[in-house]
Length: 65
Image (cartoon, rainbow, N blue to C red; front, side, top):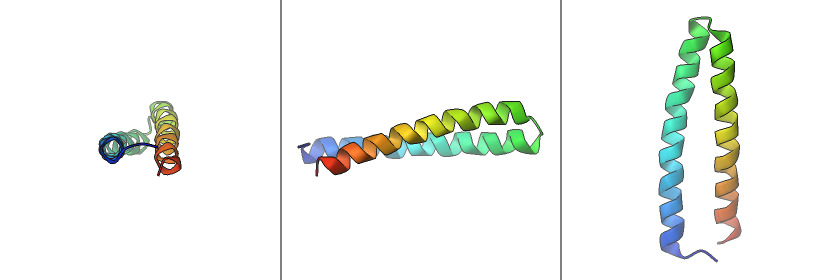
């Protein structure tokens, strides 16, 4: 079982990572608006991988509560 401080630390880290992903999503939107679909597709694939990783981290925290 994770201690509370470790859980809070991990949640803070996840929140920071989500903010970074939001910025990347905005960049992808700009690529799409500029019709740079190849670049947008690559960025969106990266975002998908990162979101899956975050989901795993959240699941790990949940399983340790």
